[in-house]
Length: 141
Image (cartoon, rainbow, N blue to C red; front, side, top):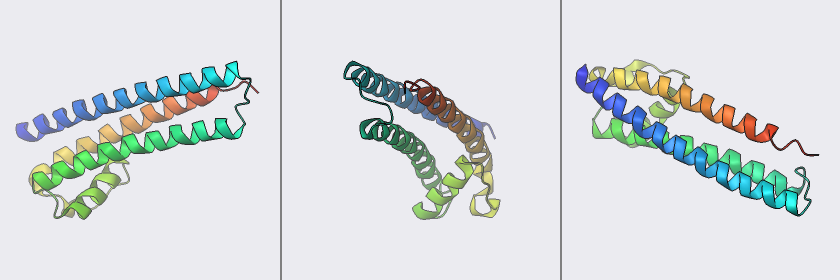
């Protein structure tokens, strides 16, 4: 159990660091875009504003995807799930807290997947708060 908790803790630290850096980078890009839109008097509802919003959403998807794949690679390396395709599927539904039959996961590593679920909920919540805050900041019509 201590080994599982150690690995799960390392994964939480890694994914939170990746997520924090990713949100920091997205914030910088969106601030630059917003400043440029203001200086050029471009409406947030312009094609350019919509593209910036779409890029933010895709950036969030990329961050979550990266974190899901890192867990999937871990599950394959630990031989906890059979095959990369199954590991990515299992990791995706675990990260999103959708749930899955535990039979796909080796019993000795189930605690890691449970913590991935908690980790995913926190990171998805963080992304939601980030996105809502960014969109609320674009209220200049």
